[in-house]
Length: 350
Image (cartoon, rainbow, N blue to C red; front, side, top):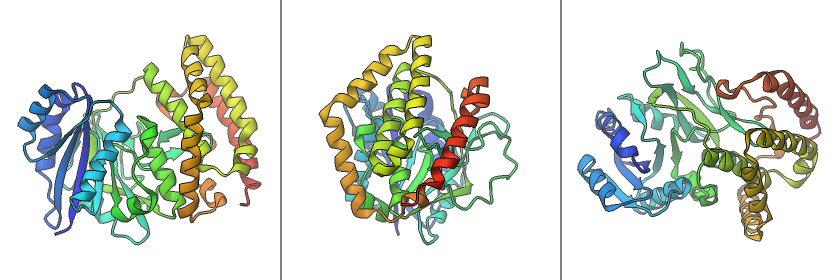
């Protein structure tokens, strides 16, 4: 039987809070035609956390790690699963409960020709069938946000065949052939936008990303704005922009990038977050950062199949995410940047 690796990352305190429900729903999976192996990657590992994971999930392969690098943890899990002969790699959060047909329906979507990655329908746990994500959207300035967030699921997105943006790292599956072609998770991202980066890279290689509406997970999602999160979201969107856009595109988008940066700098000053911006600027002054970007650009050049014009057709000029929606974003930022994007996109012929 063909083997699927299910890779879940633990972080300090997560297992005690979420693992019991997660593992119970995993054990209830009805997927008779596939073998699956659970890999628990224990970030910021301790003897106590490893022992707890062993007690709660004796069937799992447990891999302890010293730091909290989420992207690296997924990369380690995928690498081990490759060695063990897995042909599919499921990346999932621990703070979820899986429907009994979740895995069967998720892997089914990857059997369609051209599909490299697929995402589950992600609903908010205990919130009357409300949507968390039915596929994520990429804004042309590197922001990522969820489609359908907060809407009541009435099947209105079930006919989506392809996700234009990227698959949410809350619950996605990747084929081995995709990893063989584009490589593993990029550890440089540490946390946040690691799924955006993976999806963008797979699209450049010519793979489609599918939505699996009958593969359902219930996510115990809690929105928060931590200083650490803001740092990595901002840092990593630039990392994706400079790694994947062609140079003429970056030049074309430079006025929009500068305008957005100016606006975010004002926001940082108003909210007392200037140190975060300084830290991000310092990151981009490091030669090692540009060496990494250069390395990724060379790798992408080798496997790239889609033109820039084909890629940007799938991007948005608006940010439509309820948790951060405000009058400035809704009535000023979105209309202006959407207009800019509609014009700029017309000139991208390469």
